[in-house]
Length: 82
Image 1: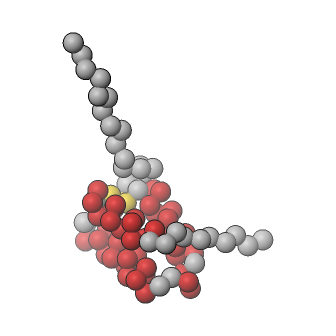
Image 2 (image 1 turned 180 degrees about the vertical axis):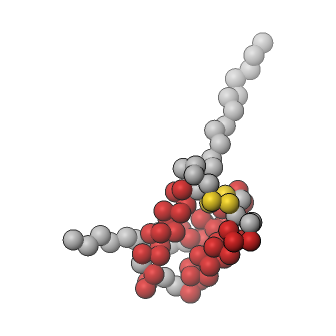
Image 3 (image 1 turned 90 degrees about the vertical axis):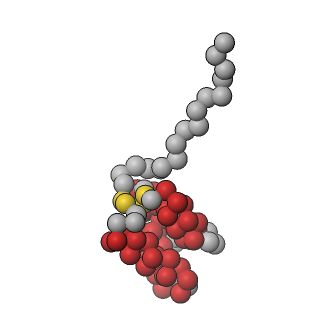
């Protein structure tokens, strides 16, 4: 039984942008990287470069691997109290 994994176009670039903005690589992000690496033979040079840059950022301390599923914070309620 073979499972085929298909990444969306520019998924790795978007992942890189989100991770560098937040400074965190979440559990979901790491699973996305794992999925990309499982299809390494079909990665472009640009996608490989993005993965290398993220791993280098972790080694240098610019990105931190966190156990959170997401770093999205809920928006505060806009209700007014009078």
